[in-house]
Image (cartoon, rainbow, N blue to C red):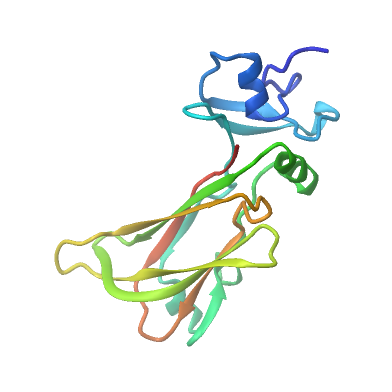
Length: 200
């Protein structure tokens, strides 16, 4: 058998396998095939060898646009998934279908992902908190947290927050959607940047 090279013709099972065969390999985009069948269903991932090797799945659309999501939705006292709004969408990870994700999890111990919440230019985070949900890959549960509302900038203050997720329950990641609790007092622009889901 040919050793894995991280190419479409000779993909690695996961980034760890590529590192074991080529200890001097550098961070970058490589092909993997977790189910180890035909390389026809191999797909590209980012391999991070900075510490322990990580196999990272990048979302197809990492940027949820900054806009007044809740004002446009005209909702009150309820959670609404951004994918149900106009211009909203669920997060997809090219090549990582159900089968490939199942085998990627079999080769992994822990998963992690970050999401950045941002206010519009000229805005900042206020002292008011709002609940937010992040939909897990299994769609059977979600993470619940809080974010600080955006408001017009009247001075200094943070304009973004980072949500970090890490779990040994590998069914939870990658994240698929975001829901923000709405009421009539939130009309400011906000958005999200979805980071890669990494497995190691």
